[in-house]
Image 1 (tube, rainbow, N blue to C red):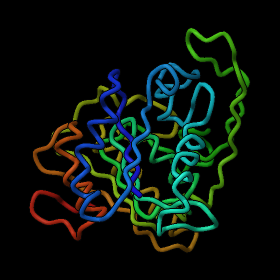
Image 2 (tube, one colour; image 1 turned 30 degrees about the vertical axis):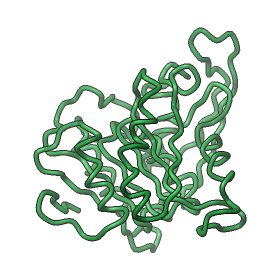
Image 3 (spheres, one colour; image 1 turned 180 degrees about the horizontal axis):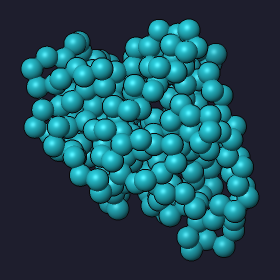
Length: 258
């Protein structure tokens, strides 16, 4: 199974387009594609009081984004070859806001995915015990989370497992950012996150993830790559994410920085 997490777009066609663009690897590798539609009304950035909220921060109007995803993929647990403890395992990809969600998902559920690729995310779940979730490892307990134009407010509580960051760093995970993705717009200043553009932020996060893994006596495998001549464009970055997840080592247009 392959799960695709699109960036924040107002059109409902986004999830469909992502699915179409990945049919080639689906057919080649005999994969079921699952593409959640992170629509604005249920999963958009209007949720909560946190910059970059919504599904990218693992919020949802009625259901946490990770719970929603797990419910979908587990519908297929009886027909996939990759299962553990009666749960489906899958390959995971996310771009931009979808990449932010992936950075959080992999440290919440390191047992659920086979490999993960993140392209051009603007923020991450940092291996920092002094920063609250969804930007770090510290517990978030907020009883004033409210969706815009929705009358109810609710409590969001999540107590992260710090060791999951180390587990995630040992798996086949990559952050891929284009060399032209240097704008500071779309890269919010949020607690715990270092860097002023997507290249810097991805590099800092990978470095700190690798350091955290070593501090906990794990051997890191998580990687950072630069794609030459590419900007903040999911279509241009798809081939690099596909190759990382399903082919082999990079060469040519991709620089293996870390």
